[in-house]
Amino acid sequence: MNENTTPHKMGPITLAPSVLPRHALTYLYAAFVSIGLVTFVSIGQAYILNEHLKIPISQQGTISGNLVFWTEIVTLLFFVPAGVLMDRIGRKPLYSAGFVLLALAYALYPLSRSVDELTLYRMIYALGIVAVTGALSTVMIDYPAEQSRGKLIAITGFLNGLGIVMLNQFFGGLPMRLIAKGFSGNDAGLYTHLAIAGVALVSAVVVGFGLKGGTEVKKEDRPPLRTLVTSGIRCAKNPRILLSYAAAFVARGDQSIIGTFLPLWGTTAGIAMGMAPAEAVKKGMMIFIISQGAALLWAPVIGPLIDRWNRVTALSVCMGLASIGYLSLGLIGNPHEPGSIISFVLLGIGQISAFLGSQSLIGQEAPKAERGSVIGMFNISGAVGILVITTLGGRLFDSMSPKAPFMVVGAINALVMLAGIVVRLKFPGKAPVSNQQ
Image (cartoon, rainbow, N blue to C red; front, side):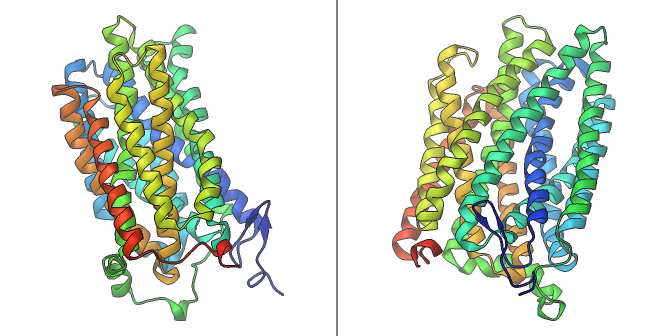
C-alpha cells in the first residue's frame, strides 16, 4: 500500500493516513516551542512595564487587562479567516507566518516608549497568536488516528508545558543575568526580546520545511468558501461541539489568566516586598513555572484516561479539576510563601486538564473537511473568554485582590463541568474507538 492509505506509527501513536513520522516529529517540535513563545509575552511585559516604562504597580493590572483586551479583539476578527485559509491552502504556510509575526512583535516590544506603542506591537503579536495557536490546534487534530487522539494530545500538552517551563525559565531569567554582566536594565530587556524573536524565526523555518503540505481533503471535496465561513456556527447544532465551544471559552481563558496574572501577581508582590524589578520578575516567573511544571507532569497521566473514557465524561472531569485548582488560590496570602506551592500545583493540573479535555472533544467531533473552520470558531469562543475574563480580571486585580481573577475562572469552570454532566446524560456521543474493538 502507498503512504496515503497506510497508517504509520510514531512510538505508541498511530498516525492518520498520509501523515509520516517526519511530519509528526516536526509537529512535536512546534508543540514544544509554540505555547512557550506565546506565553513569554506576559513575563517580558511585566519587565517592560516596570523597567522600561516605569508604570506604577497600582496601574499594571488594568493595563495588562487592556493589552489582552486588544489582543483578543484582533483574534476575534481573524480566527475565522485564518481557519478558512487553513482549509483552503493548508496548515503549513499559516503556521510559519505566525512564527514570523511573533518574531516581529518580540523584536519591537522593548522599543515601546508608551503604553500606546506597546498596544500596537501587542496587536502584531495577536496576529501571530491567531496563526500559531490555530494551526497548532488544527494539526493536533489532523495527525493522530482516532484511537491515539488522547495520547497525542497528552504528549502535546506535555511538550507545551515543557516548552513553557524551559523557554520562560531561560529567557525570564536572562535580564537578571545580563544585568549581572554589566548591561543596563533597558539593554537587558532589549537583548532578551531579540533572542526570543530569533527562536521564533528559527521555528518558522523548521515548520515551513517539516510539516505536511496541502490540505486534508482533495480539491474536489472541499466545501465552498461560504460553507467554510458559516460551518463553525452551523456545527454548533451538535451539542457536544457546542459544549466544546463553552469549554474553549474558559480553557483558553484559563491559560490567559495564568499567563497574564500569575507572573504579574508574583512580580508585584515581590516589588512590594522590596525586590528590584529584575528579581521580582524572576520570582514571578518561578511561580508560573511551578504551575506549568505540574501541568507538564500531569499531562501523561490524564491523556491515556481521556482515550479510555467517553470524551464528554473526560471533559466534565477535567473541568472539575480546573475549578478546584483555581479556587484553591483563594487560600493563599503571599504567593512567595512556601505553602502556596500546593495551590500552584493544583492550578497547573487543572489548567492542563481543561486544555486536554476540550481539545479531545472538539477533535473527535469536528468534521474533517471543515476542521480548520470549526477550530476557528472553537478558538473564537476561547478569544471571547479571554476578552471577558482578562478585562474583568485586570480590574478586579487592581481594585479587589490579585486572587480575584482566579476565583472568577474557578466559578466558570464549575459551570462548564455542570453543563458537561447534562450533555453526558442526554447526548453522550460515541465511546472511544479503543472501547469499541
